[in-house]
Image 1 (cartoon, one colour):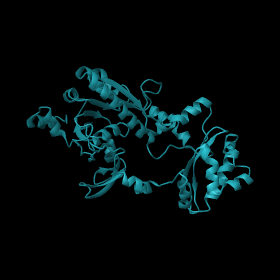
Image 2 (tube, one colour; image 1 turned 90 degrees about the vertical axis):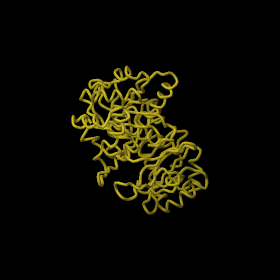
Image 3 (cartoon, one colour; image 1 turned 180 degrees about the vertical axis):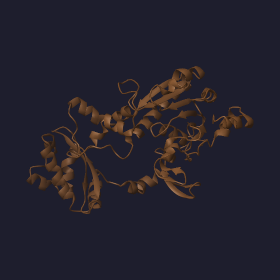
Image 4 (cartoon, helix red, strand yellow; image 1 turned 135 degrees about the vertical axis):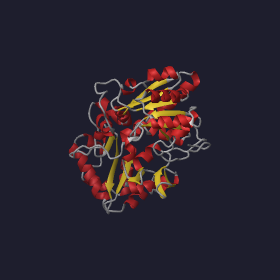
Length: 402
């Protein structure tokens, strides 16, 4: 645990699993909060076996639970619930991502916990949100992407739609939940009044669509996909990827005022004029015209190396970048320089591993990265802090409460 981060002194109790439910607390642990993760005795969080697993260390669990404490507790047992209530009494935050209604049925819903601690910030994450017709259904990242519009936004016309490999709905939900928790925490510290925060995978994915979703709603038509041609017929911009002579992709994004200047410095403009395709606004007239423009651009970008195109555009302060594979991204000079990826020695593996760094830099209270805990690693420490003695702890083990 980082005792000097910006959230040092903040304590959260979490009964969260998977990704959307754990990311907020992992990030809080990076920032110095004490996070006590409740796990099922003898089994733990099922995600301990997810991803790449080496010597009992899971890439999934390590990513989403680093820096937290593991406390095993049988919450179906009344004594187990009483221990949870003792933890909640002195906590700032409680989090869970059970199906809506499950926490209430099991004795740790918001109405129960706020009687124990009126200033508690209670965060609840679900798939569909608490109020709609699908609220009781289970869901994963794929549901968030599918329902929230992400799948269509990243689709390619004529190809089967698919949800992305990266868990963007999970990650978005984790960050949105963190934002809500911190806002409610400020309110609680200022007023003594806690509250319940409810977030969902579909709501987070929908928010992730930003102005693209707003524009689609205003027009009541879907966006142009495959390449992002936006704006209007009179003022069109583009964000798209093209392959170079070696098949290596690059990304460009040009606003309406940059379209013609970019074509000119790239040497593309005269060729498009000859074919009557120099007006990007034609893409709004038909899929055929859009595809003709993209086809001609693809042919021209495929005549030289992407480093040439990138230099030309960047020298004119236009937006472009190489499209990295995930491995290339982890070795990107800007990613490394900003510590967005870190390399640390893992004692259980006996060698260095690459992990996410933190997405922010604090000038006075830097984040310190920890490791994900072994199952029940912090049981004794937590129970001693609650006033249990070693004999009582041994009895809890014997009774299968921890």
